Image 1 (tube, one colour):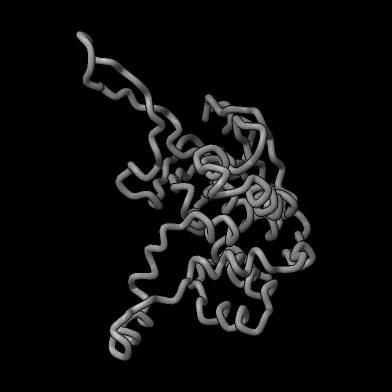
Image 2: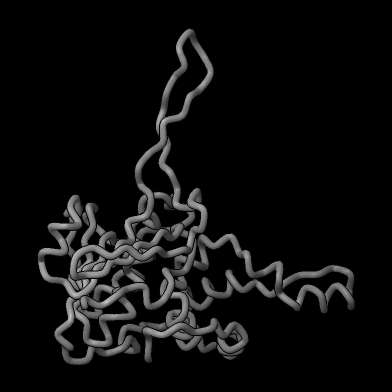
Length: 252
C-alpha cells in the first residue's frame, strides 16, 4: 500500500468495509491517512463530526440530528481487525539518503512511516526509552492502553526505522555534522511553565507541562535552514492523527 503523499481520508470507504465485516481492510484504509487509527479512535475530540452532513439529514427527518461516529468507527476497525503486519508496505532498496527525526512522537513517526518504505534510511532519536512521545506520557492509561501504543508505533518502527532510545538531541549543529541529508524536528513542547498561584504570604510557584495545544497553530510546521542541511520543525498535539505530509527537506 503506497504511502508518502497527501491524501484525503475516505470515510465512506472504511464505513462500508466495517459494515461488511472487513475490519482489517477498514483499518488499513485508516492507516494510510491516519497512521495511528487505534490511538486516534480512543483519544480524538472529534472536531470533524459536527460538520457531518448526516446530522443535517436526520434533523430534517427526525428532529434528532446525530453525525456519523467517525472517530469511534476507527476504534471499531482497530479493535476487531486481524493481524495486519503482512499488509504493511515492504521496504524498497535504500536510495542512499539518510534522514534524522528528533523526537519519537506522532509527528516524527509519521515522517518515518512515509519515508522508510521509499528507501530512505530514517533514524528517530528520543530521550525516552520507548517511542510514542506525548501519546505515551500525557494520556492516561484508562483512556489509551499502553499495548495499543506499542502496537501502532511498532508498525512504523518495523518498516526498517532505526530508533535510538534514551538520547536527547541537545545540539542541532552536532547532529547536522553527522551528514544527514535531512533533519525533521518533531519534539513537541515538553518544557514546563511556572505559574503564580495565590495563597500564603508569598506567591507559590508550581510547574505544569506546556501542551503543544497551547501553540498558535497545533499542526503548523516551520522550516529552519542552517548550514548545508535543511531542517523542518513540527508541533503536533498527541490526540491528532499525524504530522503534515512531506515535512522534510533534502540536503543541497
